[in-house]
Image (cartoon, rainbow over all chains, first blue to last red; front, side, top):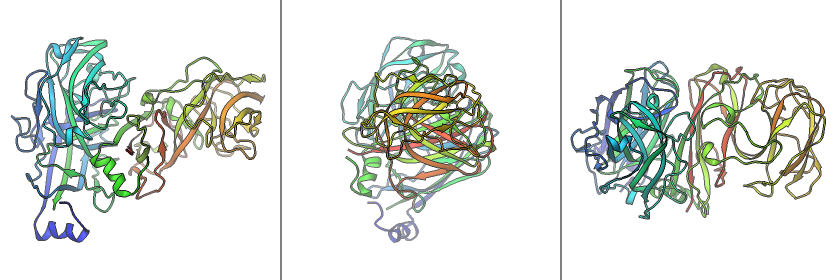
Length: 301
Length: 286
């Protein structure tokens, strides 16, 4: 499991063929507002977009082979390799857009999401979530949560005034900290992580955990109140994901490349079934229909 | 507490989930002078701007949730800065030096146009580094100022000795909001961005008073802080990345509750309408 040396790594990749390169591209939409995080899973391109299917308040598992159960939207990385372990060894990201750079691209393993629709988005009372995530990381160790806009609400911008999650130690009743504020309609367009950005109470990309916690196993409830309630027919997804790596890129049209073996020794592990997708931090107002191009190299042994 | 070896360190981050990443993006609206330090906590963007708005001359603290968020408290483990990445698309931001600091305690609305000894109220004490060891002080323009003033502070040092007197601090000519009126290029008696301590002292536990011998004009915020790490941003076409195992040793410790933010001095020009962005990664032990 893993690699015992550089020689072992080279042998596995070359002699045993345990190497795969994935190339992909996404087209951003709509125009971003500066300073926000975005999840690119819902964008058209390669892989295809997730439509975040499901019933409101219910958990949906995501994995490599089935995606969200309807759309195979995750970066394909070669299937299960157990008893070997798979690792990212190189990654590249680039965006070509006015105000597209500088930015940060973060590769995450999306464990799944709780879909939120209708009055579960616009309501101001406590919402009880259902379903149990199937974790690839022991009970959610290292996993984080974020609210994602799938379809923009018409108006409003509430606060996360209460929440209850179970941490990776299986302790329930934990609460996200800081009373994060959710973006108003201008900051809650599709793909936006709605509690990221420049206003007071914004945290990005992830919701702050309670002291002592190292991961989110599941979320039991949340309350949007204060601020102003969302209106319209917006759709949100409360996602749980494990961050794997981050790449800063400074210049539009110039690739940022990361050697995860020699440059920064990390070789993040890609679990069997990992549903990989990108988060993108836009420091500027990235223009509509901007191509985000990337490649990821995997090796296992 | 702490890490025994590389494996222990990696296990914390990778296997055991004790890591956090936070982005930041600051877009100062205030003009500044090349070569003078600026307090980025007061700039627009994320984290939310800090205005040091509380009762004049009374010590107050800042909330960690409103700075560069370093993740949940680590105690009984210890938290450390693992990686820090800086970027800017703005030519005026490079080359620049940035200092990541834990802002510990501040005294707002110091009248820099008064020759009176201004007594400060210390009902709140240092929340971290409580003996003051390594704690520095600076002053920040909280309003436009005239400049060229001189002042000293009377303080208690990290050994608990009160009545210590700082070096005679010469203010520069910068009149800009959020700028640091001490230090800077070509300034007589410049000690850099921190107030010079009395000979032999290595830190400040509290400040009892401030007195201007030459008026500077404007209002100022006296700030006690702990410098954590410094970085250089050299060009707009490459991110400045510092990783505290392979690139630089030290793994700076971040105390629970730290309010983290940045001071910047750019040789490129005024920081008005520029963008300074990046992210920080933190990791903590069991």
